[in-house]
Length: 505
Image 1 (cartoon, rainbow, N blue to C red):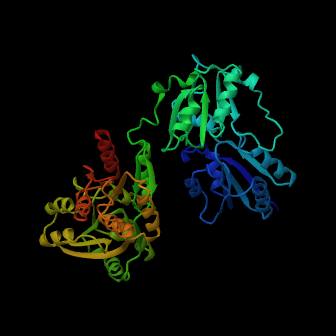
Image 2 (cartoon, rainbow, N blue to C red; image 1 turned 180 degrees about the horizontal axis):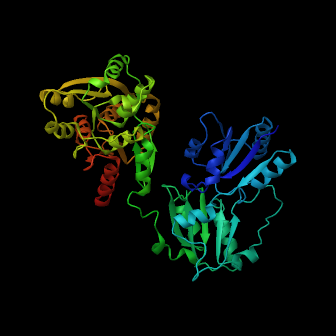
Image 3 (cartoon, helix red, strand yellow; image 1 turned 135 degrees about the vertical axis):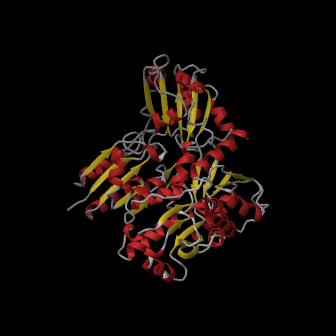
């Protein structure tokens, strides 16, 4: 039996503009065939086992010709697979969806068209330009700026098009911009008609250039404005200053490296992207099982009923402990009389899926704050278990022992440098592609320096945003200069810290 092909619009750039239907079919794909304009983060919606094939197409550079792409879709479907053809924008708005669907039909392959947000509307909207407006435009047309070069003559009736509608939107027209504007003016469009180019619309690297039909081509050449871009012509461009919303966000234009683990990075990335930043997730650390073995943790689990307190100093510690607990065929009931302490709100929240609530969460989210919060609750005879990373500071257990408690520290996981990202980090530094690097732990700082092998002089133009004073101190000891520190030691506090810093710049 044949499979099925879903010709799916990926939207104009921002991966969050994918439709629910698009996300649904990606979730059950066997094969994903994607192009240059589709955000790579969309691939994370597909199963890890799905085959992912890049067939990127951009001006004068086709990884795979269109006829071979169509043949690939047919071949994979004939293997009985569910194929998602992920296309930038909408499949039927200059997306060659018509060509692919006809070939699938002729081959007897079932297919479905899943519309996407076209850049013809999405890019102008993110630039603060409506394609229609009650006071300025009651009609619009979408036109290709790059016709099929094999056609004998243009099918665009410039004599009719130039003045037929209020707003004209040209896709893929940067290279032909001089010719397009000349045709418009020659056929009656006034030279002083407002015009705009929007590059990489809806993405944090979006650029907008405004002018008129008469001067936009010259302006674009002067600043070397490159594709992919949408060209908008009409009076709707004029009110843009009053409708801007995306490129006025506080962190717009800022490139930020998020160095948390792959599993934890999205939470911070999402907060920074809401503020307009361009985020690059390049984890400097990865979480692994203990370097030695679980002997100490297993022994503690076997005697959980002996402990009065169970203290967690990170969300990783929570996950590692309960993963090992479940490996012993036990659950939260095994904690018995033990009270729970969490170093911060995020760690406390990590306990909730296990049906647990922390008894103690300090106001200051650090080891010193946690020790101070516990002091009045201890009588000096308690047994305390702290499952954590091997590399953690000793101040918490040392302080609790001074209070008279018996403390067992067990290695529940290990933090190692994410060596697989070393070259990517070096490349970003070499091309000066980073404005800010975020750190949520001292281990992330040390791993960053180890992986990049960069001197403090090479990093002098970068601002390092730290989740708390301990992490900031590690940066200072490493000789880093431009350091900002969150007032609240959470990812939300870190995002707010970067926002406040940017607004003062």
